[in-house]
Amino acid sequence: MSASVVQIIRRSDEASVDAKLLGGIKPTDLLVVEGEWAPERSVVMQELLQQGVSRDKWPQSLHWDWRKKSPQLKLLESAGYGIVCDKRWQGVMLTKTASHFAMLDKDKGKPLVYVDYLEVAPWNWVIPEIGREGEFRGIGSLLFWRAVKQSQEEGFYGRVGLHALPQSEPFYEKGCGMTPVGRDASKQNLLYFELSRQQAERFLKEGD
Amino acid sequence: MATKRTMTLNLTDAEMNALEELSQKKDLSKTAVLRQALRLFQMVDSRIERGEKLYFEDEAKKEKAEVMVL
Amino acid sequence: MSTMKENTGPSRKWLVRMANIEDSCRTISAGGMAADLGMVAHVAGESQKIFGRLIEFARRAKGLTVEQLAERADVDVAEIVDIERHDDSIPSPRTVYQLAQALNLSPGKLTEVAGLSTARHEVSAAALRFAARSEPTATLSQAEREAFEEFVKVLVENSDGG
Image (cartoon, rainbow over all chains, first blue to last red; front, side):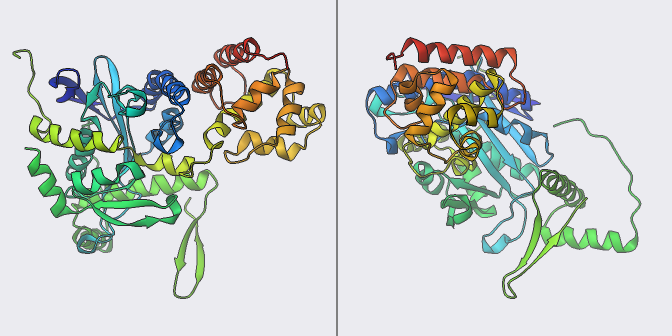
């Protein structure tokens, strides 16, 4: 397990707050994550039902269960990262390094870091329909940044691939500068994005 | 990063050449190539253990051949 | 703030810009699990996981095999297997009613959990708490039994006498 200090933004006063970015998280950590998040998922669902919010506006990861993914962390190719602040898990990400290879031309066939799952804690979700603004901001961005860093550490020059949930497509395309490669029929027609070596360099430079 | 232990490998010329070639082709250090190979082997093995099958598919010939890794 | 330790992450300026984009997207979750769950906004879709788990636990709590439950409920074995194991099967109202009778659960509330009617929020919340605490293991552990019993209590409390 590795830990480094990062800063996230507290929405109430826009202050930068210290948080820990953890790497090498264990299968048992995911059980703790879900233990913290499941009750809040339940509250969000109650609020959505109470307000009669239409399903297409529901957070698309509402029914995720991180316990189900904990066995996967036992494989060498899997890596788990999380952000802890205020003694709570604020966001979690699982990546893989040997399952996916680059599709974009220049580096086709070369390994990359594939973001398998990325989620931010329910109390950080932005759902205007039920008056939810989220406690902390920037968690997802930080985790994605960490994936790009991991890719560099592995010798993959920052190359990253992922399938984006429809709601997040603009973030990966405009925010991260990734290339939308195509819809994947084997993954429910989700759009597959890739960050090339050059795009990764640009992305990291902007963060300096 | 996790603590590391050192291992010495004895490779034949052919193996060393293959490692060198893959290293160039994939733009990875030789250590990274071996690391990838280990991850891939473990991942494939665990999926086959779960009952999945690994195939190569020839799109042009429309042929599928089964590959088993133990 | 003098207590701030050295930040090894990206700059605040970058983070604010990215956070703004994140906010406008509501979520930036990336994919695998969404694919597992199916992106089709199937009304009953999400309930199926919880419903299937509930039936399985109720059955095991009564010490019944799938065959025994099928007989008791006058429902096909295949249908029960489908409900317990698959996320995309939608049980017929009759099946739900029969299972409720066989398992001593409120039919009205079981129908809500099955996603066949609009869920009352007390039931949904209890359903989620239950699902969150249940493990997919062979035997019903103490913790699972407690979680299940708590869920059943909500169903009974909210019972419309049906």
